[in-house]
Length: 213
Image 1: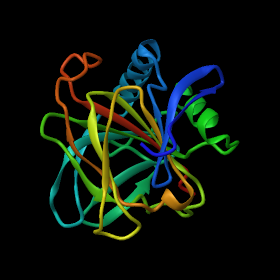
Image 2: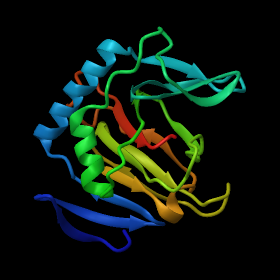
Image 3: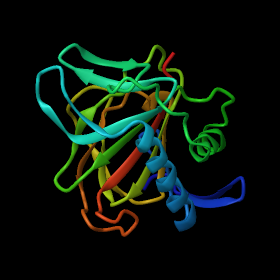
């Protein structure tokens, strides 16, 4: 990986690599921190249960999701957008404190995210190449936390097509997408189902923090 080095951030040691502007912090969260974060995700899901969506083209997504924060991400035949309530009608729960700490430590920003999108990928699930572009401004980074099963993360270009690079994101890895990388296409081609024991039934959790407004 390009520009790889060991660094310490607020007392946490991690291997930091940069690929096409994506800052990748390997093993940023230890086993204890991962377990606590999974517990926090369960608390969010108890208030805002996971649900499935379909794309504006009517195709069902292979991932289940929910959100925390002032806004949550949503999609249907009307398009992709942020909404202030869960499909069940309840307001989204607050973003877990652990997530905000990671955001502040790795981005160095005083501005907290409006949304923490939580995706669950089961066996056979994938996420096609896409840009995160439903936000009002692209000046703010996107931060992504991986938990449980490893996912094959693919990084492309600012336009579709062209050569790509891939790496396995494992439980406890964190990625920051900012600057020139903010609108780079990326996706998860597959997960290594059963590669982690963090979740009783396996699968991959991905927490993505975004400034929306």
